[in-house]
Image (cartoon, rainbow, N blue to C red; front, side, top):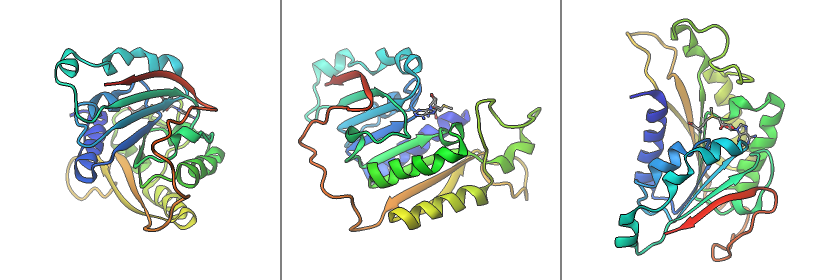
Length: 233
Ligand code: SAM
C-alpha cells in the first residue's frame, strides 16, 4: 500500500490497542486519517481535526457526515467530529484534554525556529496522554528515484534519525514524556541501514504528570481557532 495509507494504518493499529476516547489530528488536510478513524472508532467519542488550510479542510468534509446506517442504528456512544482552522503553533483551549494527538507529516512544513513553539503547544499545553508524530527520514532519500533536494518543495527541513530522536528526547525531558521510535516504508534489499522511509515517534505521558484536570463535561468553545464543521451522531 502507498506510504500515506501505511501511516494511517499505523494510527489505526495504535487506536485498536490503546482505545483512546478523544483523538485530535493536527495538520489533517482533507481529513484522510479522520475519515479512516470514523470506521475504526473502537472507543473514540471525539474526533477532531486542525489545519491551517481552510480549502483543504473543506475538500472532503461531506465524507465525515453520518451515513444512513448511522441513523438506522444509532451508536450508544455518540461520535462528535469537529474541524478547526488554525495553526498548531497557537494555544487553543479546546485542544486540551485529548487522549491522543496525531501529527503526521506536518513538522517539516514548519520553520525550524517554530518547532520549539510547536513542542511547547503540543506537549506543554495540549498535554495529551499520547502523541504520534511522523516526518520524512532524510537518510532514506537516496533510495527515492529521481529525487533531488527535499521530498516536497514546501518542506523547510528533513531530519536524519539522529536529529529526529534528539528533538524527541529533548521534548521528553522537558515535558515529562517517554518515546519509542519506529516507522513505515521499508528499504528494499538487505543491509541497507537507512531506516524507515517515514520515521514515527510515539510519545507517552509519564504517569502522574499532567497539567491538571480538564473538565471533559464542559464543551469548550474555540477562542483562537475557527470552528468550520461540527457533527454529532
Ligand atoms: N496529515 C496529513 C497526512 O498525513 O496525509 C497531511 C499532511 S500535509 C503534508 C501537511 C499539512 O499540514 C497540510 O495540510 C498543511 O496545511 C498543514 N499545516 C502546515 N502548517 C500548519 C500549521 N502551522 N498549523 C496547522 N496545519 C498546518
